[in-house]
Image 1: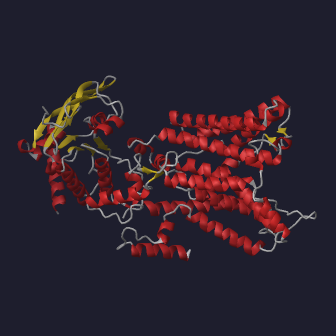
Image 2 (image 1 turned 120 degrees about the vertical axis):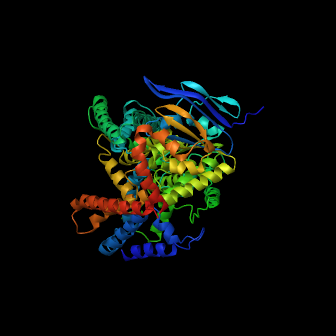
Length: 375
Length: 265
């Protein structure tokens, strides 16, 4: 706390004679939305470093474990954050994950499609559903909360009904054998840098199984996707015209329209973005588990929004960052896994999640006031 | 032969169903002229602005710009030929930086196709330079617009319209939300813009702000123009009485004396 108040003080003091190109890095940081999430994740790591430092949580295997969970959440959190910056919500993310899962599994298992065609089919469906969400919100002017809440029920219901109709059950197993030799599936199912882990294992630097292979076999695909999407989203938001349009659309819809920003198109594309991110999430999980489950992704939309909010996105739109959402996802992923390494009962995780979100919202609100304060 | 007017709005009428929002409104502007459009609430000012800005299509009448008859299909068309409208809400996003606001919707780009990036350095330079010309020292063009004063925001919005090629500037109540000091800063800037050859339509219901800067005055009442007057032909008091309607003048006069007293203090 003392660090924060000090830096704000120094900002005020130096504000008088400050000139162009003489902005302190501290001030730049203070103006960034991800400040809170950065502080939060540092605290989380310090906490687990002290409480669970000697338990194996930070071994190669343990680290990859919590990174994998963080990364999965991060993939959807980043898309949710971009949509929130654009001024809308998507509550159908979780249902979209379940729906995308069966879009992959049913054609591949029951209709004999090659796995890659069913993956493309799932992405095509995602684009359609995202487009539908977007066009409904833009054309009717209804709150996206309502439109996507409806889609949450429709997609989950359709997933369950279609799966039971075709397969007679609620799970579709048997995908694992199809992954090998598939031209696309490896994108979502390959551990990378395996040579590195094999080498580390041979040097006895990381834990080994009894048969001599390393316990951690490589970087899971979720982590690669997570990093790539964080960089991509940050590039879009900070460095492109489209990024400026996202901020403008969320910040002031009418104003943005008046100066020529195609607000409708921006919002529709962001809805497609969340649906596609949900499908990436589904691909990774379905191919990892080897089966699609109709309940997969339940409540993920709320976790994604929570991560985005902890990462500094304002619920009212126009403010936030992809890196912040990524850090928010890391906080949740780390705590949800780290809690196993402590003596704390895992039931407390949701309490933490809720408390973290409340603190984040209060903090963000304060920051917004600071940012928009008139001289 | 070029006519002496840069832009002419001839006999503009606009109906919404049975409601006559505007009837036979005519305005003509020369380069460098500031015309004040005065009218009480409900006089039809908003409808007229939206017609000038291309949001509404007039049901009758014609718009002549640089001797050519123009039909606007969208606000974009009006912008493209050089009619820049600054709305009352300014179309500024307070959470976004000065630069990002300045170039909102028209960001300069650089780089290869498909990898084009928003040229922030160039944008920062231009934004700071343009704001500097108005005498607003933007210490840091990446600071949020929310940190600027009302007058500075107004000037930013006007400066943006000029930068993007406005020849005719339509300003909707630019001083209504401002204090005396801020208002005079904005008015000064408007006069400066006009002196550089722009035609300015200044929409306001505040005669005290309009009278010192205007060259001519058009009074709108209940959707109809009560005529256009050159400054030398009309007094401040006469304008006021036309705007408000005769019977309310007495009441107003008392209040205005009070206002004058406060403003002069």
